[in-house]
Image (cartoon, rainbow, N blue to C red; front, side, top):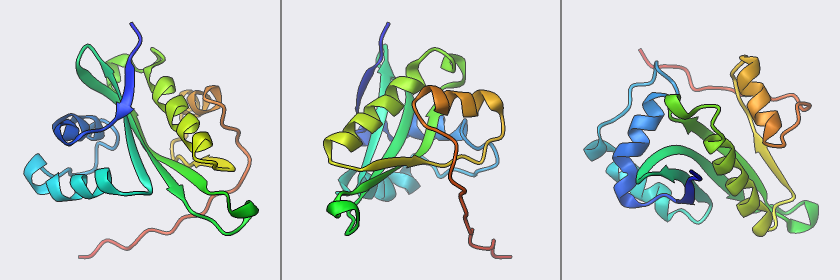
Length: 150
């Protein structure tokens, strides 16, 4: 069965938190009540689209697409995909690839000249998944993270 790909809605927050708990086990996630204001802000952002894959009425995969305005490249925006996660039991089924492809299609529809995706994962299966979605390894990424307060 093919999943339905759609933009996330307010009522998807509990399912999103469940998926995010499978993304980074070390992250402490908020409860739905504490996260509601941030979730509403994410859903109403002009630059952010939260896409979900729904299967049999359940949200089973997601990614966030950020489309950023740009003054270079003939003022064409660029996009970034973040927080990609598929329910553990459905990994390898093609559901995650469908949600990524929908995000890329949305970026192209909005005139983006490129879509970027960064991962800290080293597992070849994860890297191969992104390559199967059309991404290529190549550029060097740098990041800096805010130090954790004591």
